Picture 1 (cartoon, rainbow, N blue to C red):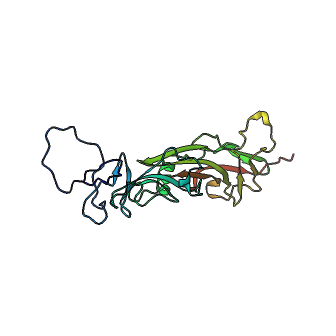
Picture 2: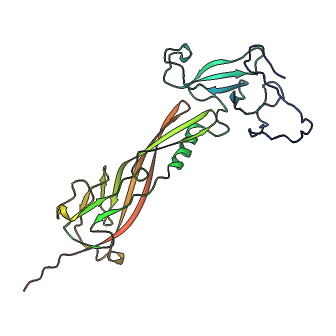
Picture 3: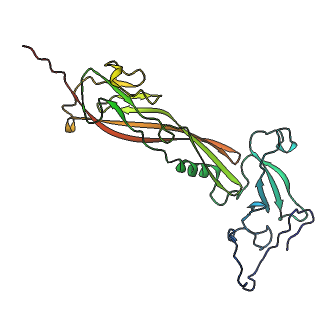
Length: 274
């Protein structure tokens, strides 16, 4: 048993197998991992404790992030606020040391489990958003025929998963990261070598808007698609998402894209001369 006099919680360390129990309900905690031991001994401790937090093998302390964090005026910040985070330490590695509040610029070693850094959790949060490719709106409509020199309207119907903003959180005990994604721009590769970049979803076309160009996102084909494979231009719409995340005293940014394709036939305007 390891019970320093100033330790707020006494931890019993089992170093050998006990006798089989009978008929218990069974625990749901994490199994003990063999790489978590009290420094200078062979005593195994849980790498995660639901009360004390995550074990730091380097100094023999458990760390739990304080929630809420201390006010900016608290001495424990050492003038670093708002950088980093403050953690509650419960230490076993040094006799007579009970831990206390400590500030770290980045999470202590082992915090969040092996390999689970805030950046890794940010990727998990991103995958939970299920960002979708853009739905393509065009006039003339996809699969139909337009004319050289006449405006083509381009748009996509915005939603949380196709345009944003959308947020998601990924967490493990003692560490939580929230990511937020929103589209920065949509690029339209028109199939003839030109690309149109728009920062808005575009304006849906209705017949009442007449034959003029789109006020927000559009294109005019200078030549027909007659010589293209299948006689059509393949149009590719790509949304570029800006993703920001924060948690565990860290923050960062990611960029991801989603793509949809369709095709449109463009013909020359035929003039009849009688």
